[in-house]
Image (cartoon, rainbow, N blue to C red):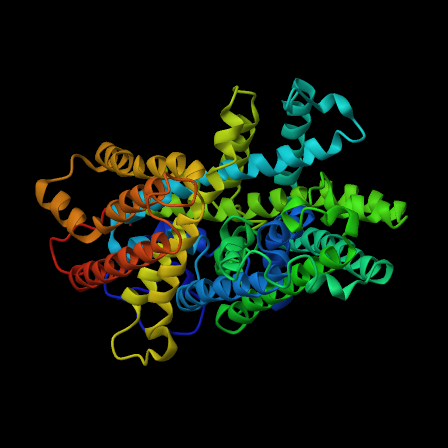
Length: 546
């Protein structure tokens, strides 16, 4: 059987699954143009930079409001959950290192239906980058007030945002080496300022009794530590670790470097977040704790704390970092999403024209240009459209679940499973909770948008290859129906649950119900996937979209 595109030029590997179709000559030509320059340090920097965005400026306050000092342990729990999901992604990427692999594995494991829905969700999630560049411009209003008026970007603000998008695209345009160097510089800045903040605040206002005063270590009960993962936004603060995975096709040695790079990025980010949380807890003045930790409310938490201890220059640095951090996230996001869009063209969800990889730079420039254009459209002032854009990033959480199914489905027969026997099902449960914890406010928009990918992918493929036969439709539904059922079930749980829903399912019964539902769906998904894998190479079985 032919090897997957990214295996060309690397050591021989055992076939992952018979369902993986042979790559076309056109795909192999474009894959061969990718530059495999990324090592451990570069991959770690990408992961760390994408995790630590502008959210660090507020994360500690929101966590403290939800759980008090117990929030320190909540950060550790968020990091452990992220590592569990990451282990699945790096296992797949090490065995099948492709640019944009997160949108390829669902095709291999469950066929075109699942790949179409996930591909559509990933394409929509490009809009999340528009929210980041909007935040960059919004923070610039401290020095240029005319960029943001009446709660949204002004026309001049939109123009600046589009120019910044073009600049970030240009930095991605000229090759992965330049991408790496720029990211190193951004990572240094994004690390130095938070570390300096932790050190100076601890030196200026170290009050360890804050861990036990004002209601004790767990003033709102131990269950609040779990609530902080969702309501406090901790699971989203550690999101971003998947970025090195989508660059696996450009890694020098993905089997050797990818796993330690991703896990190191998560560990360093969590260590930084724990330090920031302790600095916040120790530095908050007693006068702000009159009504307990839930009464603490700052418009710019660390900036105001720096002013309270007369560190005015640190406050200025923090405001500057508020511009750099979302800008860095936009820069990384454009580069990563270009690889995913390129992979969508390999899947057949986009025209094959977007498969083009520039020979000199090794960058999928057409995919990069498409993403930059989509972001520019999202930036236009369409009334409340920006509210929708802010929720689109949650669509990428669906990739975590489908990757867990792929990891359980695509493991070669006879290969010792070890820990990977239990990590994928646990990862699927965690991924399901990540989606559920997004709250009804986001899910009532994002999940119907994801489900719209089902008819759209069928229409696109019918227009390219002709109408699907009844037999093909039945086979695709048999292999992939678990995904729309999972999405619909999560939407119902969210509507009835306590994460912004009607509250008919109360804590912790809502979480228990979601976990039981997820366990049943995972078993169904893996059974369907293995049947798809077993039939994937039989004569007469269509491989549309491959």
